[in-house]
Amino acid sequence: MLIGLLLAAGCAMAQGGGPSDPRATRETVNLCRHLLQLEKKGFLFGHQDDLAYGVNWRYKEGGSDVKEVTGDYPGLYGWELGGLEKDDTNNIDGVPFKKMKQFIREGYERGGVITISWHANNPQTGGNAWDTTQGTVSSILPGGDKHALYEGWLDKLADFLLSLKGNKGEYIPVLFRPYHELTGNWFWWCRNNCSPGQFKAMWQFMVHYLRDVKKVHNVLYVYNTADFSTAGQYLERYPGDSLADVLSFDAYQYGDPQKSDGFVKNTGFHLSVLDSLGAVKHKITALAETGYEQVPYADWWTETLLKAIGGHPVAYVLVWRNHGYNTTMKHMHYYAPYKGQVSEQDFIKFYRLDKTFFEKDAAKEGMYR
Ligand code: BMA
Image 1 (cartoon, rainbow, N blue to C red):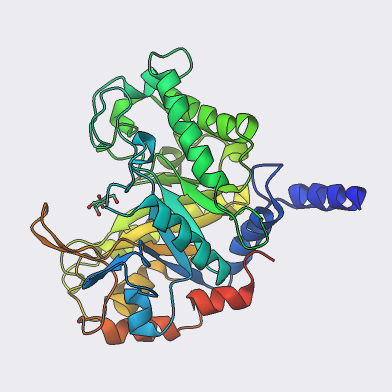
Image 2: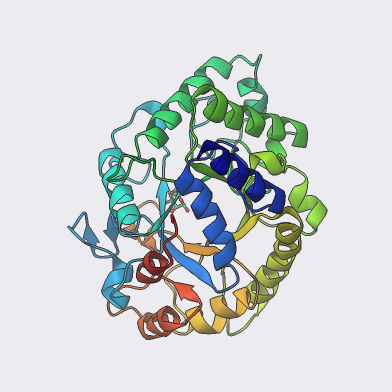
């Protein structure tokens, strides 16, 4: 039995396509393989904070704007850990961590997939994730004066990840997307705040600490950039194939897609770079965050987003959260339609396509089997 398992694992490694963690749990290995397979047929549709709140509701049993429109939940759920490092009860967007864990379990048990981001505070200054004080990354590296503090944050992260268990006691696999949009200039881990070497060292330490010290083996690591212009630039801060499982980027629609095809063209270009890198490295590819705030163009789903994705083999596409009216921003902040929203009908069309996998399709696929 053991020899059989070892041979199977060896075989997966030889063919490529297995997770970067040689000790990944069975469900994590299966999820990794399935996502790679899925890319040939279509992609999971994801939504941030889907089960917690929507444009016109908050914490309602069974609530989901996506489900209200399509009759089905998204195939992928995005959750956010900002605030966990401070032992806050709620995350930075007001989601209680206790509830988040329940939502994660519910989505997983129905067959959905989980991805997690982390807008962690600036460990050097105590400011928020958008505090770009120079020197922060070097301060948390081994030997840095905030290293011990940061290790404590990783302890909390590990506790969270290891607390996610399914009905049979198995760990729930998570697509973890730390240090996201790393080619931007707006977070403390971004390109303008550290050298490629420092970024890689930070990533290497995190994975080593979670895997080897904390024994976290239910994670697929998502490498995630903002804009980039060449494959070389995309990979400049890539930590290595043994430390990442998904190649992804974030891209949003701004302006009117009927006047400019910039989003379709740029996203298509970025995806073509990921296609070739993914094929060579046997890595999953994804559009990890996207959307058009308030979706004011009625046909955005099939006429813009779908065209941007084109024939590119992406495993998932996630749109950001349906906050509703945002008092800080002083406008409506949402990315998925709700009942009565102008793009509702087009979203239903998008839902019905063979290549979009919402939760019922994901469950049929059996992402963890
Ligand atoms: C941003 C906005 C913010 C939010 C942050 C982290 O895009 O949605 O309101 O706090 O993401 O989720």
